[in-house]
Image (cartoon, rainbow, N blue to C red; front, side, top):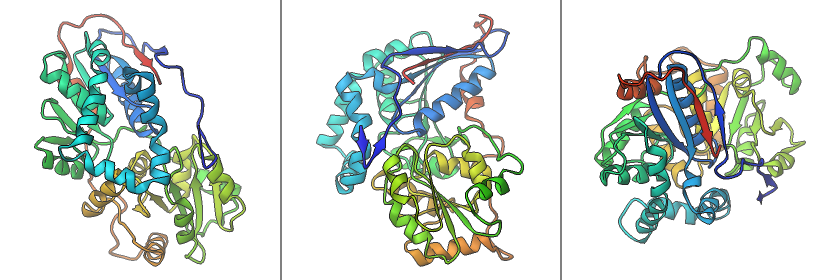
Length: 397
């Protein structure tokens, strides 16, 4: 599909699989099925990182794409209609997000959709000691299966969003894990007890010397304030409006992660003090070269910034979960929310020329020793699993 020139990379065919591993010798400590979703990068990115850590600890892990559990047309609708709705019908998307919070036709539609995935998800869960969901609809399906006795394995949800939502929280899920303490507290609104488990992103730091090298490659002087702008893997939201706000600062340079949105990259090409970039695999280096992350949704890039100690702010958040995430992040002091260009300019100036007494770059947003993989391993490790080696099987990713 295309959206404003947005071109998506080819995805694996449905129900394709590939095997990674084994990651080492020794007995299998447990078997875990992880269900993510190929909608953006946050859900399947968390699933892959959890699988990597669990396999390294001796677990046998299988990753599935929730969209593969649905009829083809339904899966495509969930994946392909998300970006156009956010971009062109923000009021509709916000209404859908809010409407799902209360009983009514939208809730019934969500329940019907989740019901379509039950048979395949139950099959994925067979033989597993635990099933972990990193996608909200998958969490609802898993909770329903657990309630009906069709999944005897321990059921776990890992919330990738900073804000909780009805779809993320199911009373029959055994364990709700979140990135931050703030999200765990927010989940209490739904009658569940959640636990801050820390980030599920690859723990990478910028390579030494790349800050200066990257700035030179982009034509940015060493003393120029740099705002790294992230709009998710699809490059959605009012990115041009955010770029214009950054340029209200007389010296600030905007480095824009356009993701798969080639049209956005072309639109920003040639604008003064703006470097629009396509798909990048060196985000850690780019964060090391920046002074501030500006985001609009609270997704994976924000988590990576928190891990890197890079200050982050939200600007012009996308509707629905973007605005909900923004409110939670602001209340918890994780990321501020400037409402207009002048406020954003003040934040840029603050991080570029900090004064004594400014807030430290990193706060204890999660317990110091938090590790979602360790929590899962401690829950599911079975004494009887003696099969040597561990492996990761990836289905639909």
